[in-house]
Image (tube, rainbow, N blue to C red):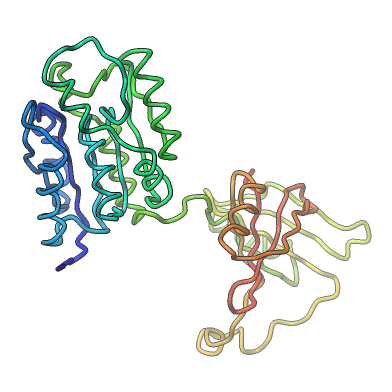
Length: 335
């Protein structure tokens, strides 16, 4: 199978195909401007719709490399049921899967008595297929709206069964042509965020602060103030053997340590040419919103094992891990 792994967007339409002529077109126009290919396959619609026909068309895209591991796949209505079954059967894992008003995933009683009954019956998903989505696809989202109380329960069940991030939008109903949904700005925003973050990268962490050790803290503070840094917190030991000053510039925090008894900066650190080849730093910190969740993440991903959360002198919970070089990296809870 020839797969070029090109990043693109796939939109799988609803039962009547209206997705292609409403917000599907808006997505295509928006992202074509960014040189991101948007593919909108035409599947059989209404009474001619079936999983087998859907699968055969998608296999063609899979074989020619258009549908690949870097594809962002967006499914509308019954397209979700078909896509879930396809993923399990073909063991296909996209970079991201976005469900929009997922329909025909479950056998939900309805009041219609036409071709839709038969079409939906052949589309329903099995638990093992939902489990595949839940366990294999990392980035999953579900857009839903205020269709009915029964469908809201179904959407929430879908979100739980697939472990997706639920995104509720009021007044969008089924996101269809009947309700004139020609644009979904929140969907466009999500796709942009996914593309910007290169999909799949962890968004839990941010750079929290940089630490330096100095000879004279007052002189150093005045120096950095020239660049716009402002003091916002400080601490010192009773015997003044250690002083800590915190400076901030926008979202950048500089932590300044000043010891009475200190070791001079090595000569090699005084020049870029001699300092860059030397492994080491004071430490840098990754900030998180919840320190306990960060600890769980680090252990689960086998980054470190024995972790002890402590509360620092400035009142923030933290813990340290080591990188492959033995350099200390601090994980600290944000303000």
